[in-house]
Length: 358
Image (cartoon, rainbow, N blue to C red; front, side):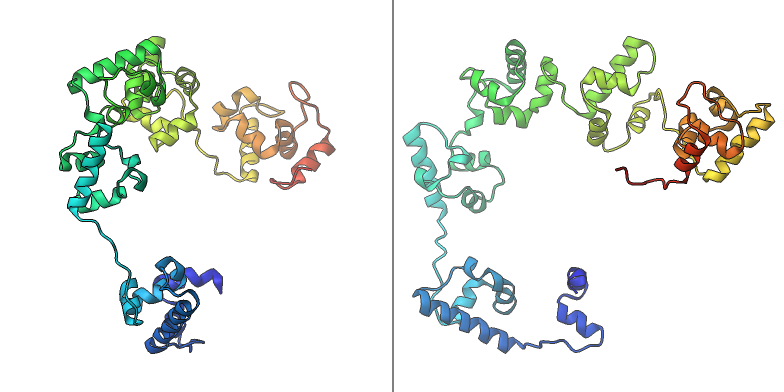
């Protein structure tokens, strides 16, 4: 019963608990002593074959039982009668010294990507965990080293102004181009992205249009002012060079709702869904045609005005206006459309809505 295995374990803890709760007897009933004996037998067998104790990843399939009955991997190793491996946790002093030695050798602070054994450094998680900080900049400041991305004599405002000028001068769009072209005293790409946002700087410099709520609102209001009317979605797509689907995904709401939220009225709104059945829709068309004196059915141009539903709604249900006239008992009109015979239309209307196309 693999199809209910996951949900059964979610609500009952284990498969056997689920079977027992249903009032049945589980196939296998292993006690704690039996499970522990099996685990000890496995580790003894491994030791005899490899002349060493196993690593935790080599017993990954049994990790759930080991944690459940012993608490941790090392406690399991000790309970089996072996000496657990030394965890080799470096002290804070060793961690500090490794960073200072790197700084003296290279004349700069190390980046987080350079935390490799070949560089004489430990794993970056060791520094973050033992110094109890959350960012690499805090690690370097904890040791007393200058963070590599803050090596600049500029203030925050000066840095922002100069970076925008540089982006505008070289028409930069991507961070890698900024890293290649920036002078030595300019802030690093990491600092620029964290402080100001790369897309926002490109937007201010006029090299890139980021897809944000701010940019969509800005372009919509600019179009409204330029056209002197409410712009359509198509005009907004052309202005921003992006599809309405991408805007909807970024906004996480329908585009018309967003336009209303900024105090504007959308140019078009989604038509209301027709909830009438095919038979009711045909009856409505026939009744409205007779009521308004159209002996052969209402013309397409007046459908929305006289029936409340557009031409697209009728054609989606009846394939074309000829199919609608046929159902209502009116004469077929060959003008302005492909001419179907009465037999062809009857065959089309008999087909299921989602018939497979060969």
